[in-house]
Length: 73
Image 1 (cartoon, rainbow, N blue to C red):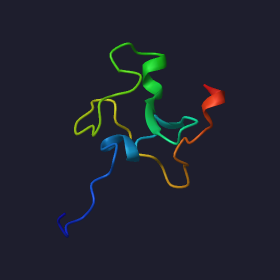
Image 2 (spheres, rainbow, N blue to C red; image 1 turned 90 degrees about the horizontal axis):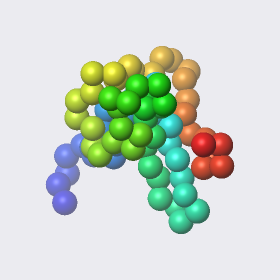
Image 3 (cartoon, helix red, strand yellow; image 1 turned 180 degrees about the vertical axis):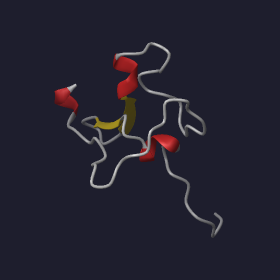
């Protein structure tokens, strides 16, 4: 292990307004791209960490992480 800064687990998605975190009953967390609902060019669950994305839009101040329970999907 290095002493450097920790990398965000989902890369750019962790700061994107189009991310929704989905937790399953076993405790795993997946990053859902909400852009995938309207644009087939975006994968529903992108391979992480995402290092580049043309649709990335940083969250505005006060916006949450889009974290909703699995049952809402």
